[in-house]
Image 1 (tube, one colour):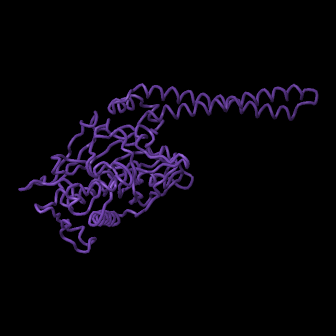
Image 2: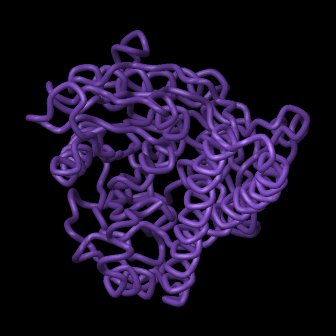
Length: 425
């Protein structure tokens, strides 16, 4: 949730952020009203509790002939305290629901608008051109014996697939290369759980407007994650962490699951938009003062990966209305996909400021605060370093007229030195 002090002290800023996201500013007024009602309920409860404690002392000291009346009053007070406590619980629930509708305050400079209102910050590389009719990634994958959509559908339904032969090896090479890069950049490698509790999924913001994209195991009350961001955010839940030596950086390699609800008819061919994929996700816990610099650093790591793999791309500043509820700013990197004649998203990198940490209660002690000194919520950031979708751009960009695909040089050591993936007989 957003900083309550900011909400109370500068509601106009929060309203402006909601408008930029395409949301109603009235949610801010509703949240303020609910917050006031919650505080009033707590005050009333505390006053009654104080009165009850004082009355208890009078009962203990009262003469015998006055005790019966005082005990009756004590019972009445006890009933009022119980009602006041119920009122606090109801007010806190109402405040929680109202505050959940106020999304993270966007950082100054984030473009307003929706999906098509992004700002292109820069492009890199020339989009691939061919003197032959290029094949799309699925046709290439089938010729190489790398992708089998037909049997994936037979086994699991639409938007599932098998990566086979060189396809499986190529994904392993890509993910291993990315993990090596992450470790060299100071990230701790992690293989996290892919099932999480509701409070973790909710805390990261994935049970809001995107809840219909999340798979839930009802019998166990657990959720399948769509990104390692979720378990990595929960890793330090309810903790005070030490950032004295700098940010904590993790790289989580996991299988991810998304229902892709509402996206049918869009990118249904091949492995661009599927229900299951692998991903290496960077996750950072940082001081709020360092968050924007960490955000830039994540993007630099992603760009270096793209450049070393020979992909043409652009970096965009995502518009406020296309941000997730937790993100205050998001940069996407989109690679050129030749057969689509368009840039397609391969990475997203979000600065969630303190929004997730407030929900998950993750704090640190700022520099200079000793022992029992005050704590503050950390900032959290996340960014993709590699995912199955990268195979789309890699196959199409590096294809040759005979249907073979040149393997980018950094991946060859992970493939036993293979330089070219050849079509199978």
